[in-house]
Image: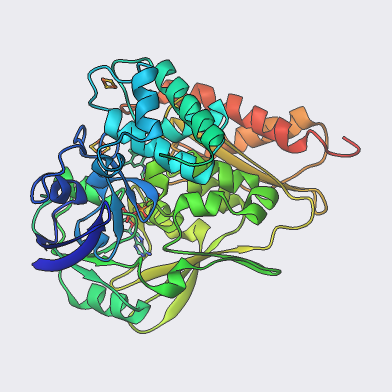
Length: 161
Length: 281
Ligand SMILES: Cc1cc2nc3c(=O)[nH]c(=O)nc-3n(C[C@H](O)[C@H](O)[C@H](O)COP(=O)(O)OP(=O)(O)OC[C@H]3O[C@@H](n4cnc5c(N)ncnc54)[C@H](O)[C@@H]3O)c2cc1C
Ligand code: FES
Ligand code: FES
């Protein structure tokens, strides 16, 4: 009933022994202590658990840890580089896009996936990309502005830092 | 933790069918977006979960000359982003994009949507109007099931023990085919349909096919109608057919009365959209 899995999390190789019914979200939060990924609903509705699985935004509560065997996972802990916030994270701060912060890790990863596939998104694309991330605080406008600002800055710099 | 099942990553369709037939309480796992929620909610207690996403042939997405093929492991986003599909059968892309959220569609599959057999399955109406067929592998044989025969009740299909759907086939859309999908939901964000309808119109054969979801135990394909006469008259024929073929109920999303009231509105709009560029109308 348990499986030995090997996966890359934020660039580091991780090995774990997991029961088949453990979710990727549980693996990240408990044995790996990466508690930046949040659990809201546990059933794919809220987006608080969004991570990148082989580059694609997914809700980690609906992925089994064994399904991630051999995959590359990125969580919010992998967004900053050497303690330096990414342009996207800084834009969230500058735009006031985080209040209680519970939705923020998932929002940032959905936005990260969007900027990776569409570096200069329209507001409509931004809204669609974060439609699966519920926020009870901000009213979303500041979040959309933050993603827009990050896209402009990354475009201006020619690279993401 | 989602209960106490074991997990196998199947490497071939044969392996998946064999395990499904041999082992008690074994289920297929595609995107898991229906299955894992049901397990979490205690509605299902599988002993073995057979993941089919690593089977190479199920990842094929191949719109070719005669028949289009959508493998059982193709996630909805990949389907909806496919250029030929967006251009030739936009209603299929629209229906796929109406399902859940972006993150969900990176996992959820078209085949999973059908096999789950919800009366509200958003992919069902459009595939009914396109005469889609499901390719099914069993422990001994292969068979092909026309989608109109696939659903047998709420959350029930005609699949038998050990059968795995490998892909969906759609006859290549005829020149000029028009397709439309409409979904009525409670909110603009992601939600299951209160009523969903799809239609296809072939301007050469002058036939109109319409299907309705969320208004009967299964999604239903209405009798095809000939698109002759005024658009308004055709729409009324379709509304009449739909009223005869459906039996809406009340549930958490809407009352039966509301469904009965909104269905004709959606159908008139659908027929209008499908026939708007009809020559000689
Ligand atoms: C937050 C959320 C929002 C949703 N919104 C919508 C929506 O708007 N519209 C909608 O229609 N649905 C919606 N759904 C339901 C679900 O996401 C879809 O039905 C999805 O397409 C299911 O595909 P899957 O690959 O995840 O299926 P899975 O969960 O993997 O499987 C579903 C069922 O089909 C069986 N199965 C899967 N593949 C095969 C196969 N190849 N052969 C035989 N059996 C198979 C499984 O055993 C299971 O019983 C939503 C779900 C969630 C959690
Ligand atoms: S916790 Fe995963 S979507 Fe809500
Ligand atoms: S900042 Fe509180 S939920 Fe979004």
